[in-house]
Length: 423
Length: 139
Ligand SMILES: [Zn+2]
Image (cartoon, rainbow over all chains, first blue to last red; front, side, top):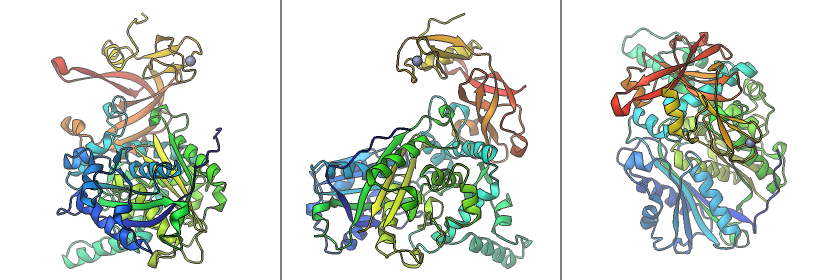
């Protein structure tokens, strides 16, 4: 694949980041969630930010129409931040909505148009039932040729999983190990929706059964727990409940500034040195259904711009909307060869203390996946890790100076990749 | 046999209703497009013709869905009665998404990538809402 080496007109840096608590909040709207994230962002800017200096907003939001009857979310949010009459643009690119909002903000600053831009995303999903969310997220599939075949969003990734299993010999246990790893990280993230390990969930169920005098489950470890259809029912085989990211309310945002003014906000900016975005066909039209061309293209574009290679990158947040997606994702960004993700998860290479830590935040699986907010939430985790502020989940023994985010939309027809540097 | 219809979704569905699975073929480079496309994605020319497919292929990817779309729930599917959706690779080369019928969706481990399938046409709805859905079943 030929990828043209592109460059930004000028450098761009992140000087602040904020993430709301992720979870299910019946008393909070998108506006409340975004303000929660924005308030944290303001606190995170070492030398402070006067909100009046922010020149534009790019906001990711995917299914506001379904969840809150609200399209045109960006100016509404801008109105709550005191940004009127400055430009506010909603970016809708399914689960990569805020990944692309980040990219649009970068492009706007690199072009010289603005110096200070707010990018972020928000999704309020728990207003809908599971069936309602399945319907809403299903709208990101090919409505003419995938949904008439009965495909759901988990179903498409499940189909990808069957081809991956057939081609590379992956087993259901490999998917389960991704979930276990990401929950182990998410247990250390106070913002995570499922702020607990799968082992603790399992032990909690055993304790509950004992307390209620019910038959005590005989699971000896997490894998046995996850193989029990009562504990982990099928959603779309081979994807089960614990293979799927949850239905989440949440928001996230980043403060982007031109490189030449970055040091007036902080001594430790996180520079965005590579951005890439790609597209792909619906799954049925892809030449190889075990890889996402949009991600491979976006990754190569980002690597070329940054002038770095996959082996240089120390950590990554990878789009694990479903466990299979993380395995495919770590191959698409070149961390492991095709089919090599199986060995990587078996050997713990992607664990927090492994050679290539993936999803230290807990990933979408454990942290939660408020779809429009996910892209900038991934970048917010990188911001913390690079500045040594990730607390209990700080990657041990590594001074993180190069990192990557991989944010995929729908079943893979769209992807944004960013590469970050701390100098 | 060859249709004069435009290369649209509506035409594709009308042809399905006549029991024909048809693709568009680029007259310049020969690339087949299923579902039909009016512009060849290979050479980006717009000189296409309809071609009928034999309707024989193999299962390339699949899933059995327990948490289904609202439309499928209305058909009686659900957590205790999953349905199978798949991607079928046709003998002529292209792949398409389809309902997979006459398989045991409760035992997905028994379904295999590569199993031979033959086309079927599924009638849904009444009167104006009548629609033919593309389906495949084991040979
Ligand atoms: Zn052609």
